Length: 72
Image 1 (cartoon, rainbow, N blue to C red):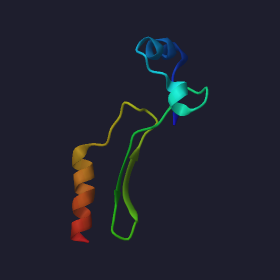
Image 2: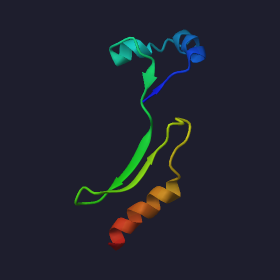
Image 3: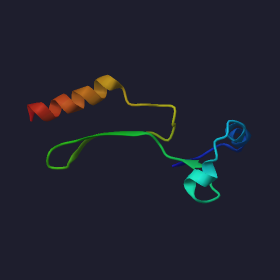
């Protein structure tokens, strides 16, 4: 989770996005995007979770991790 910068709160409110209501409390916390590749025995083989919510996993990395499961 990360806390929304105070300067962005009015922007979200102007857009009609009520973060505290969605959270069920008074916080302006948002979830972090994450990508996981998990094998059949439930072992996590790949994780991408960054504090910078603007970053996403590279599709080629995710595909390589998934292909690695097929080779094992």
